[in-house]
Length: 255
Length: 323
Image 1 (cartoon, rainbow over the protein chains, first blue to last red):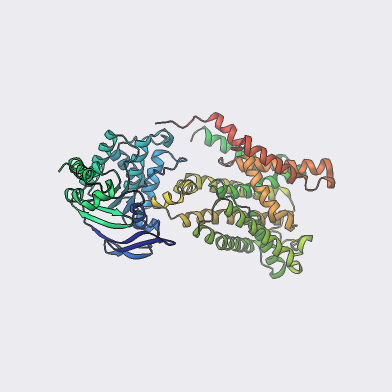
Image 2 (cartoon, each protein chain N blue to C red):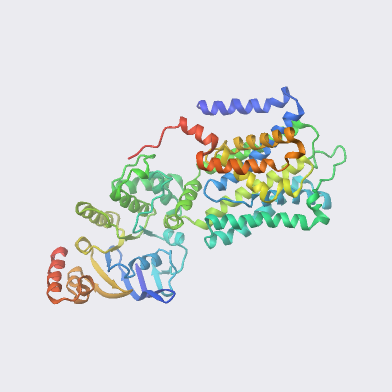
C-alpha cells in the first residue's frame, strides 16, 4: 500500500531523516518508535505533504506522492493526526470534524460531510451534538477529536502521531484499543508514531525503530524489543540495566 | 418563516418605500452614501473577519471607479460594460497580489504590509498618469447627452440612486450571509487558526483564501464604480489610497466584524461623523475625521473588539454550550 524508498530530509546542514526505506502492507498496524528528535514526525510530515522531502520517493497505492500538496494527499486517502492536538477553537467539535468530512474526501457534499462526522465522532466516542465547544475537552478528548478529524477524511492509511502523550495509563490503553478497533472494523491501515513503547508493542503488527534519522531496527515487536541496538538507544549501554530493560520491554510487549 | 424573516421583510419594505414618501434630497443623499459605503465595508469584512486584514481595498475601489470612468470618457464604453470590466481588473489585481502572499504563507502583519503597498501603488498610478486621470485634482465622467442617462448609468434624481444603492447593499448582505453559511466559512476559520491543520483536514488553503479575496475585491470594485457614477466626481483621496483603506477597517471594527449588519452600522457612524465635522467646522476640519477614526479605532480594539452591533447582539445570544 505504501512504499517508501531512500527518504531524506535535510534542514540546512542538519539531516533529520537519512535514507529511510520501508513498506506498509494493506491492513497492518506499523509502529514507528524512536527517541525525541529521531525523525518520526519529520517522516510523518513528508508522508502527509506538510514537508517536501530532500530526496527519495513515496509511493501510495502506486502513485508518487512525494512533494504533492497536503490537501491532495489527504484527498487521495491518507489521514493524519498531529502530535499536539490542533483543534479549531472557533468551530464546534462537530464542525471541526464536518470540515474534515467535507474537504477531506473531496466530495464537497454537506450531507456526506455531516454523515462522516457523525460516524467518526461515534467511533471515537465523542458527542455528536452540533454546538458543543472544543474548549470543554480535556487532553484525552482533544486526542479523540484529532482522531475523529483524521477519520472523517475517509483515509485508507491513517498516520497517528504520538496519540498517547499526556494521557494516564487507563486512557492510554483505551486509545490503543481504539486504534486496533479502527483497523479491525474500518479496515484502515495505520502507521502509529509513539515514544511510549509498552502500550504500542501490544497492538502493532510490526515495529520500526528510528534513531538520529536512521532506521536501526524493524520487525515483529518481540524481536525488536530484544534488539540490543534498540535497547541501547532507549536505555543506554550499561550491561546490567540493559538486560533488565530487555526483560522489561519483553514483559511490556507481552511476549 | 420565523419572526426574524418577517422583521427583515418589513424592514426592507420600509426601506424601499422610504424615498416615495420622504424626498428631502440632502437626507436621501446621505442615505445613498451610507448604503454604498456599507456595501464596500461589507466587502472588506468578508475577508477581514477571517484575519485577512487588507489595507489594499482602497486600491480595489480606485480601480473600480477609475477604470469605469476612463472607459466611458475615452472609449465611450457604457458603465454597464465598463463596471464588469473594472471588476475583472480589480479581481486580476487581487489575484496577482494575493497568490504569491498565500502561496508563500505571507500572513498576519506581513500580509497587511503587502496590501498597504497595493493601496499606495494604485494611488501613485492614478496621480502619476494625470494626463488621463486628472491626477490629484480628481476626475469627472462626461455627462451623457439627455435621454442617454440609462445607458451612461447617470441619473439626476436621488430616488433612483437610492434604490440602486439599496439593491447593491442587499446584495452585499446576501453574499455575506452566503459565505457565513457555506463550508468556506468553516475552512476560513480553520485556516485563520492553523493553516497546517486545515490542510490536514483536506482544505486547499491557497484556493480557499484566494476565493474569499476575489469575492471581496470584486465587490469593492463595484462599490467604487457606483460611488463614481453617483458622485460624478472621483479623486484619489476619496476612492483610493491608504486613508480609504483605513476608513474601511475602522468602520467595520467599530460596527462589528462578525455580524452581517456590523459594516452598515460602521458606515452610518463614519458618514455621520464626516458630515457633522464638515457642517460644524467646514473646511477648517478637513482630515479631522481621520484623526477621530484613529483614536476611536484604538479605543474600540481595546474595549469593544466585537464592535457596537456585535457587542449588543452578544447580550441577546445564549453562550455556546460546553461538553
